[in-house]
Length: 125
Image (cartoon, rainbow, N blue to C red; front, top):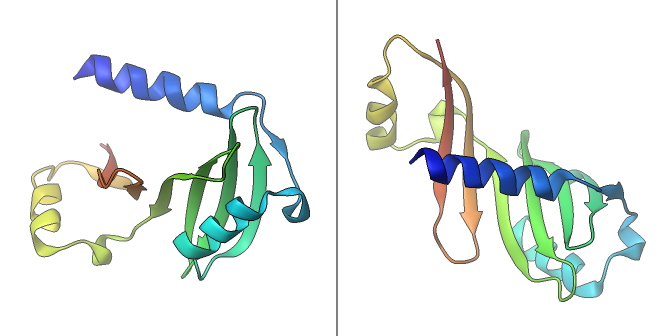
């Protein structure tokens, strides 16, 4: 399990390196179209790019989020959005209650193009 966490951290760090802001009018049509389909109610959108990806940082329904697209073809990779505890199912809330002596610092829903959607919870003491 630790190996997977390390790989995920290294991947995230590599995505963050060498990013620079990009204006909306410089984005490929495919990126604009796919973003509008994935996050139709997005507000306050800011775009960044690195050599491989476009990143959209946005808010939707008062929650912060990030969408990731392949640069060459505008193919959607994943979208991350902050969640509140009230948006979780009863079963998900019960699982989080198992950490009674902990504090939930953040909840993020990750939707991926391969349908391996997950909810990430950052829990502190």
